[in-house]
Image (cartoon, rainbow over all chains, first blue to last red; front, top):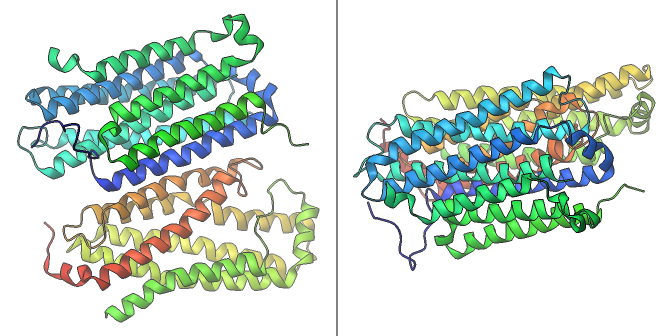
Length: 194
Length: 96
Length: 234
């Protein structure tokens, strides 16, 4: 297993095919973002007023959690590739823990809204809020599934492991970072932009 | 572990955290920002810039084949511009 | 056997074409009538294009029937990928049946609605609602179908189909999800005529099935299909 790439060797981490999924999702979410701005432009006052009922603090916490999980995952991958491979597993566990924390926070946030009578049907802003954070949450769950799968393979996070293991780990990592970057935009767009 | 921590990704992470907190804190406090409705623009610009670093340093697209890197750069710039400009200018304004 | 298989694969894109002729050419249902339209407006659509919608319904039902050999071909590919216990192939076959049935019944409802256009407007709108939601909302079986295809491709030791087709399938699967919630909305991007619940999945299903058809035909042509006979998965 080779160590980190040198500057003159260009490669994509993970499987080639997963990047089709990643870039495809970036395009689709790009469409989501533009759709949101379009619909918001028709009713700016409604959106601004509804946005105030979101908990910006929760949104901030969600973003910090996800950014930190991405960092931990990047560290895990670094550890995996270098001689500190024994740290890869605990770092990956930490990533998944933070990922689960995100899901829990999202659940708390949603149930808080719902108990206050705010649902996906309340108005157009909340439709976008629930739909987009919901579709994003599905991506989070898929990402957690893949990373969790890597954790369950006993021989994968070791010094001399199969190419398939490396490939799946890197692919899952790339997907997780996608989930992170999409949330960064969603947070700014839905919680902050006014 | 210390060697691991002292890497580029840690620096990037810290910058991302700082940028996030800054966006969240009211940018609107600055009078001139409020005047020109730049608050939203700044927030979105910071957000898309953050995605660039997640793509290049976390997703490791910095070392990726050129065409992939190009896609990533184009994505954050074009989507970022489209979202930011249409927000600021009311480009998609109410249908007459 | 290969000739029959290739024919079944070809039938897929042809079925989509026929579907398009039915929906767009005859019924003139592109763009779809909005869920926010009044009963009177919907009734007017059916009285102004009665024959077109009847023929459109028949044509779409024909297309729905023709999808089955295509999805059967996909299952046959998956069976060779999976070996002795082809659970994903079975899953694909069954979920494809549900999806095809939804298009079939939806088209039948259009036809039934146009069968007696002088019904009370509310009844016409009810049948129209039913038909469109059948077209757009059955996301769960579609998602499971495409995920099953993806999993089979990824677990295939002989790599009959290139692995990127699995990820492409996963991507399309995720895009079916907004459609499931079309039941909640009468306007906006997630309604049955909305950009995210209708247009995006509609375009992508067309692209996906053509891409899969091409890849399957390629796999037969370049010998990967035949070679996989010798490889037994664990």
